[in-house]
Image 1 (tube, one colour):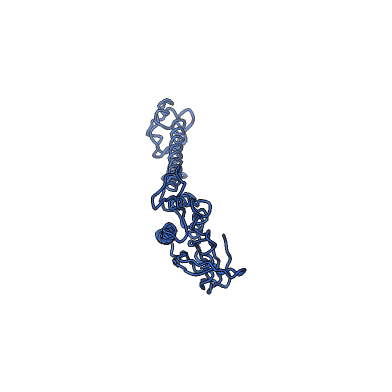
Image 2: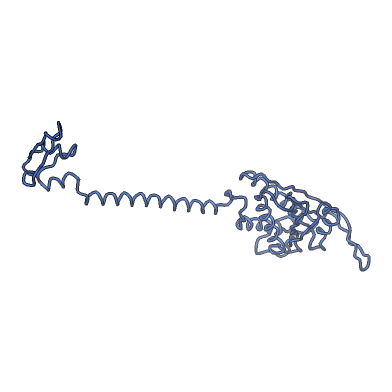
Length: 283
């Protein structure tokens, strides 16, 4: 080993030949190794002090795999929780979601209102003689009240889910007569009950969505016209999620359609369209 202090001043320069390296004491390695740990002269001892990369790499791979698996499990659990919540009856849903489960439940309510005999529910396999949702009867009035309650429920759901829009709900009972042009005969009626919902829009022009809620006698009225009633309820829920509609929307749940379109006639005849420049009927 040589030390040259002439050129470098107080600093020393150390040269070690290959033959001298193994014979140098450990304390003489400091100028070359700095703060590194003391090495023994045995290669086996060096490997024993955890400087072997072959032992570090598997631990790193195992740790990375564990974290990846942990994150994957969290994602799977969150996805399952989301779909489980959607499947729970009554669980909150976004305002603008058409929920077929809720629509089918509402249809079941309408069928239940139809399956009465003298005010008493009839078992599924004993449907002969059921009342149906007859116009201008107690079962018809019960159905009108059910529709009005469902509309109020939609307003409440919109507010609970952070929405601000609300629809106006009106129930009107009509008495009158329909005059036939052919023979000037008249059909008198009394107690026809229509339920209306109105969502204001940017234009005074209006879009009318109509579905009658009554049935013929002895019918549960699922397809005629319960399916349309529950569909309109879901449509109104979605429309309330829109910040501003281009047109005003009026939903008419009319009575006595099976008795001769009396509910629709009453709606049209008693100035219900006075503020509407354009009305489109969607049946």
